[in-house]
Amino acid sequence: MEDVQEGVLRKMLAGLEPDGAGEGIVHYALRRGASTTEMAPFIGEPFTLRFTGERSCIVCGRSVKKLFGQGFCFPCFRDAPEASECIVRPELCRAHLGEGRDPEWERTHHDREHVVYLSDTGKIKVGVTRSDQVPVRWIDQGAVQAVVIARTPYRQLAGLIEVELKKSFSDKTNWRAMLKPQLPDRDTLLAARDRAMEALGYELGAYSLPGEEPLVLRYPLVDPPPKVVSVSLDKVPEVSGTLAGIKGQYLIWKDGRVLNVRNHSGHHVAIG
Image 1 (spheres, rainbow, N blue to C red):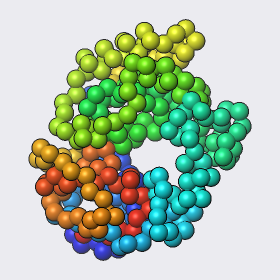
Image 2: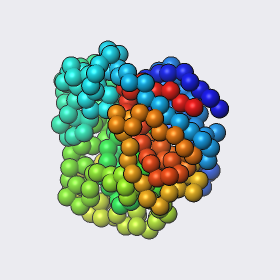
Image 3: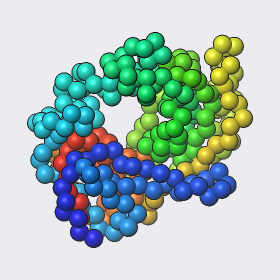
Image 4: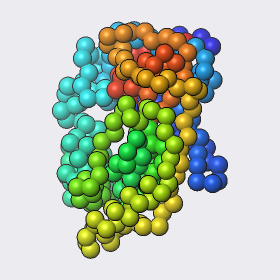
């Protein structure tokens, strides 16, 4: 299963194969430049990820010595819409006003329908994403279950709902808790939704969806390790061993080492 072709690492592609009963099996593909490799054949098998030492900005493609954020050169981290503050804080988005670092990009990506959701990543958290990013956003976060609780016509409004709900729920994922074996608890998720509905006032509550069905997500994992330690390709340029599985954007080796692929966007790598 050798594949020594090198390429620029990007966030893994992820999809879901629904079973028709509110559950789905997650599948992944690793991207290296123009090359895409399905990961299912590697689960439970030897797998090596090797960093070549080269780095490129994922926006402009410029070769750099240091990356910022999740794969940006400094000018793009400062100026590109993909790295704008409203990515992390949607309540600050101004796309619906025709404003932003790149108004056309904002119009395409943020001045459109968004959802607010609750997901279970070791604990219940609140989040915002574009409607067309469901369930990919949940997969990227490693959620074992999630449910849409509100739908809005643009990003900033969804962000305002999230701000209100952050008084009761976290908006962060603890990666260690997320990577622990976990069974979905539907009752806990639905009870959290009830609390969220009660927390929204009349104006924001007009966008709420109290009757959406939760989705359960199952990840490709074979005998996951009981303890994990995060590794960085900048410090350990080659990670090799039996791949126990994938969850969120993490590759998980049987010996407990895990690597966040998204955090290594822009690194040139080869696999084998």
